[in-house]
Image (cartoon, rainbow, N blue to C red; front, side):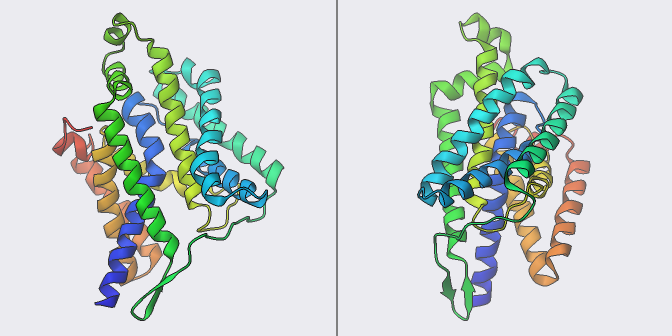
Length: 288
């Protein structure tokens, strides 16, 4: 029974990890059809903000929950104004531009922080499940992921901001005729996506040491989660995160973490072959 509880908690943690690291990319792709290949670097910078702020004496929870999304959100705003707004509707050009941006950010972070791992101590102690010791901070990550999905659902479903944003993404001309500026909506949507990436990086920072190249560890899993989930932000991200997180952890416990990663990637290939429009394109066509 203890071992089953450990496996269940680890599955929940992996699902939460995928939800957190994919949410920003899901907002940008699901609402704007922009594939941001610098997403991993946005997450990485959020982690560095948390570590640098904590070392400067700022409370770690304030650093990860406020400063990281704020700083990365401002960075996303600048990127959208300088680069992304000129490339809407040109997916290949956007991918190339954001890939180049990711290389630039890696170089700048290396210049500022160096190429050695940096980390910060997790603020929550471990706990016992029978004979097994579990990381208490994992429970915090699960809680943050649940609150994030709930907040996104409420904003997109029940607020004027969410209604206007979804309407502009579906038909920019209609939104413009109603007095809304689609360019501003795109700008703030990309900014929100970047802020969510910063939040993910800040929350994940205490778990592993960070390097300027750490963004590559996030972009691959985020990318397959979002693409497999489909256009719907919440239902797509949740569905693919649950499937991939469960498969990854079960296979990892049965063999090795490397085999778990391979199983997740193989499953993504199969799902995309069977459902080219993603999970929500097949099962949740009218969902958020």
